[in-house]
Image 1 (tube, helix red, strand yellow):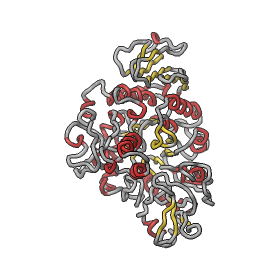
Image 2 (image 1 turned 90 degrees about the horizontal axis):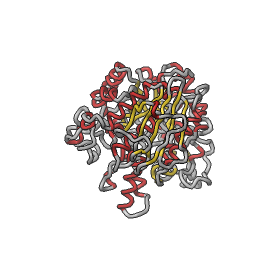
Image 3 (image 1 turned 180 degrees about the horizontal axis):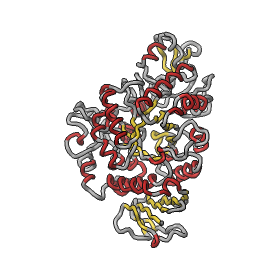
Image 4 (image 1 turned 45 degrees about the vertical axis):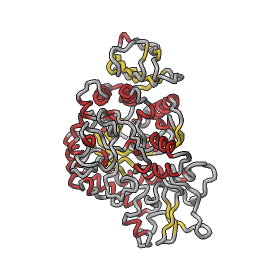
Length: 547
């Protein structure tokens, strides 16, 4: 693996297309809207784009149920619009990666329609099993979205496996014909000029052959039999050898429930099959196992996760840095404070942008967008949220409050571009609800404010790109036992920085680490004017630089 690969210098912007910008006036975000905002994305300092799925889809899981892998959905503008966006991005020096979702398809995909009819060669494209003792499910595995992981098909008279929604049947990656289909998909987009893939739940693609009952896990039964399954590395090596190695591209694995040691089996720069990994450990500082099992926020858990990945990947693999994406509620509501909205949004940006790795910024994160709070559970679109609400105990008010905190839909509302009707997202009624706070949280307002969250992100990203120590330097954490401060340094032979982040609503005493004399440093980034050296204000952050 070449240690100078281009992805190490990029900052990616994630676009969840249906909520980014409506460019043709039908109320749905599309690629025409993206084309109009390429200069805006570039102005952030972002020089890469990750697109959540743009393919034709029935929409059971907002595009992650794909019915055609080699086309762009007409509602997003089709292939013509995609080619224009790809060309426009490349003209600006920006890379583009696509979501590759090959653990499962839509049940409306041609492969599944033919598989359920036992039409060759598609008969074994999916994981089919007869019922046990008649109509009992083949095993006790749970779906991560909707109840049990098996659904009965009345045409084929068998059960099919779906680790996610019922309309997302799992592909049988043990079938070599399925793996050839994956290679065709990769080649199609890479030949078109795409620069790589974010590979959805890619660690799930190999299931244990005997599909045994799970008698250990109390929740998500079965996950230990398919997460990091028996042939996952064999298949990923095959994709790399037969396709990816032929292109100047990179791949990002999405991997729930993964440790740094497990991650290195995928992304070690000496012999890994992929370049980056989206892991979830730092997103569990206020929950257990998933966002739908909330706990009190623990700075200790957050710091432990940050430091563990920084230390254990250092020199052998490359980190993926993020604090928001389409799968999680907004970070200010989780780890920050709505009372100190602007300060905590900036502090959270500083907390991760100066770590070693490739940063990702999710649409709206750069203006501090907050969780959407609907008045009725029927307003939710997300299949996982609807199931969770229906199967959560308690009165409707308490259940709804839990969804405000936990739902993925909390972060999927239209981007708030300005204070005009529909937040400037569309000239007509949008496909989804606009957060009611858009008159004062929007891009246009923050463009005019030098002290805005938006302009803080620009300064922070610009600074990290100028600092060699952010890419090459060592990482050291200080004040590990503090339940209020996250303090770390980055240092190489040219320079060193000290990053100080307060996660407290109260003022906190601060003493720099031994050997870090602040009078010899430049304060190059801050979220309060005229900071007091020994006292941090609520959610204050500072970045000091020594040359």
